[in-house]
Image (cartoon, rainbow, N blue to C red; front, side, top):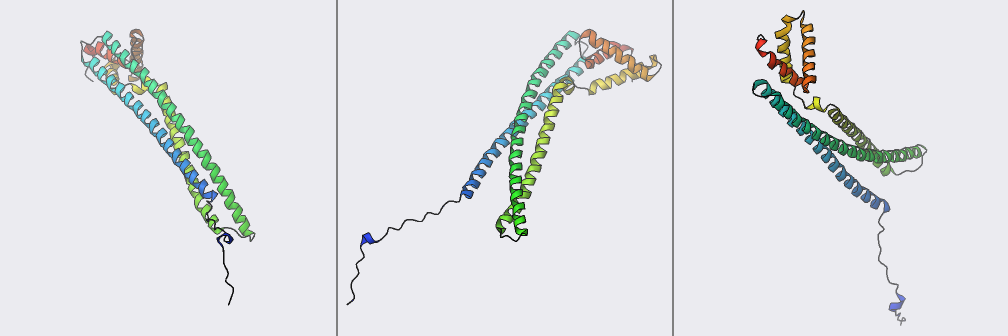
Length: 260
């Protein structure tokens, strides 16, 4: 009879569980995606905050313009509205302009922060583009030398690189748009009165003054120069903007003017 072979438990090696290693590249990609999503959220919020600040500025500008328009019409049409009352109203609208400047400064600061974020994103993607481009060029050179390469890696890089270039182009466009918005706000701040004043009514009244008074002068050009000069004198003497000085001159001469 054959010998009986007894296998003891101690003779068996315990089988260790096989643990599939997590590829470091996969972990790195996941971390990059999470980081990018966080950056997207931060960028979106910064962009929304800046645009909201800009819209607030536009709203405040419109508020002052409306008040200027109504005040001009009231001063022109209401004989009982004195110059002193007009000056007090103008002071109110000037206070609104001071407030507007603070809103403009806040919007500019928000857009500056947005620019910093956009430029940071641009720099990161630009670096990523060059890394991938160098890697692709290296693979192509190895391939041309008859060396074995990873075809799937080459195809992946050929797919990624155009997307990175497109993203850079979009970021560059956005940065230029934000730069333009900052410049627009700065011009508003530097010319805050011109930005918020109402011109339509005054331009019409000035034309009527010239048409009605030009017979007193040798030419329409001379009439224009003389009337502008009178308006400037009134503005300086009374301490009021030229727009209101124009309306004041019209009211003062109204009885002498021929219908335009």
